[in-house]
Amino acid sequence: MKNVTLRQLKVFEAVARHLSFSRAAEELHLSQPAVSMQVRQLEEMAGLPLTEQIGKKVFLTAGGAELARHARVVAQQLREAEAAFDALKGLRSGRLVIGVVSTAKYFAPRLLATFRARHPEVELRLGVHNRELIVQQLAENQIDLAIMGRPPQEIGTHSESFADHPLVIVAAPEHALAGLRRIVPKDLENETFLIREPGSGTRSAMERYLSEHGIVPRQSLEMSSNETIKQAAMANMGIAFISQHTVGLEMAVGRLATLPVAGLPVMRRWYVVHLEDKHLSPVALAFRKFLLEEGVPLIAAAVDSPLAPVRAAARSRRARP
Image (cartoon, rainbow, N blue to C red; front, top):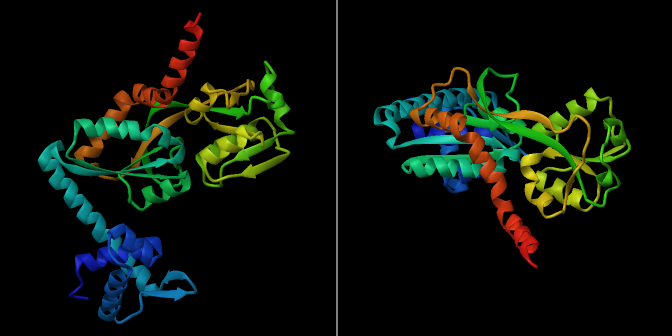
């Protein structure tokens, strides 16, 4: 394969990562036929099939898996070269790829906007996924830094906490438990829990809390996003164990109520995480330092900003004669 190009390796690495020609084309801003042509040219040079399609699914052959491994190594070396050049330039430019768990999407844009205002030449990319996918992206070195609630134990990482992360149980104001002044964990056994999908950090935290208190929910309804869970809770379909950072607006306008359960909120932490052996670029180092020094007030501002009009309206009503 003496004549293989970096472009062809980049295309094949994307196909191998997504196991999809269309998603690789979308990521690389190419047409699907162009991606297919690059892979066919690689197959001709290799003298072996690299992919096979069964139904609508794409699989790697043994040769494809081997080439994908080498393509990832080449891609990583190119990223390291790019980071080295960025280091020579300082913070005037550079690229930073950040992955955040879905619960952090309520404050992550505020963090990035503030950082970007100080470093306008830096190229930022933000991906929002559940915890399982963020861990996978860390392991495959697809992201420089991750913001998450619980650092992974299954891969070697370096993590530093930078802000509190309170978890609460909420329900519709008309829910029977919402009118109580004090609730013990056992009171929750007969309730329907609105829960996130497997792989979610919020779900893992909820399962640990329930297990610690010997609670087996009567019924649970699984949903794939915090927004859907909030809507279901407001419709009084059940109660939700959820990050307090996601429900400030709904509580301020009276659509949700925090249940006064003994032992809550569960106070966890937000972490900035990267691979243990990863060489961080100047941009990544600067962003990590920025989170550690300024994350707390910026998260508070991001969570509180939707509430400002609500509070202003409430003050106006109280001021009327």
